[in-house]
Image (cartoon, rainbow, N blue to C red):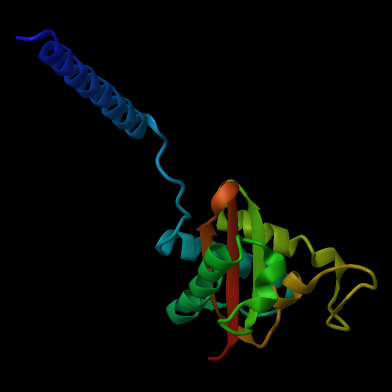
Length: 177
C-alpha cells in the first residue's frame, strides 16, 4: 500500500471516529437533557382551574361555574396565539385575532399551577367594591371582578409554556345556563 493510500485510509478513519464521537456526544446530550417543558393540561388542570375559581365565588354571593370544553378550546386558541405570535407578551392581547371575549390573562415564570394563577386574580379582591361593582379609585381589580360576575356561568381555561421559562394562561367566561 502506498503512503498516499495509507494517509487517505487514516484520514477516513479519523473522520469516521470524529463523526462517531460527535454523534455519541449528541446522543448523550439528548439522553441527558431534561425533557422539554410542557404546560400542564388535561382533566386535572381543568378541575384545578374550576375548583380555584369556584372557591372564590361564594364570598361574593354568586353561584359556582361549570366547565365548558368548547370554551376551554377558545382559551387554548388565545394562549396558543399569544405564545406563537406574540412571544407571550400580554401587551399584545389587543391584537389577538381570535376575538374579544370575557377573559382574564396571566403571565408568569416557571410552571405555575392553576391555583397560583387564580390566586393572583383573586388577590385583587380588596380593591373591589361590590356595592358599585367597580374597583376602588386608583386600584386594579378587573380580574377579580370577572371571577365573581354573577351572570357568568361557564368557564374554560388553558395554560401553555412559553420560551424563556414563561407561561401564559387565559380563562374565558360565558354566561348561560
